[in-house]
Image 1 (tube, rainbow, N blue to C red):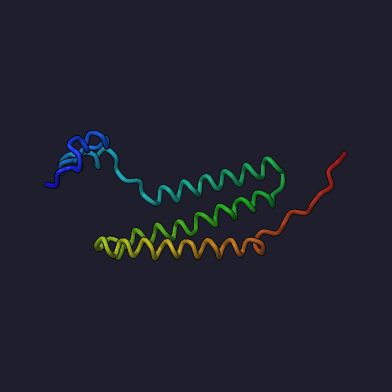
Image 2: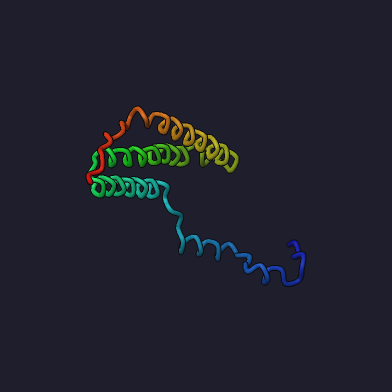
Length: 132
């Protein structure tokens, strides 16, 4: 065991080295969140935001614009989650790290592509003159 640099270093840092059993108990108490739950949450919030935008403005096109923006987040996130949950990503730590970076680049690329398509997919709402 390596001695701390200072005698009370562990106490000052506010952490304790856990035994294997303590670590197992901590993992049982705080299980990891599934990436699919995160993607589903993003989808739900995107739908609610699109409905709110449409309802508050009364413009269907504003709701569609917000929905497209939400899809530009959800689709790449779903691809990323799918890539991280694949068999290759869980072989060993090196392949997991490689899969993480690969799928992060795919996610960024798809996001940029969808945002570049946005002007063609979402036509602007016609401007109306304010009533006086």
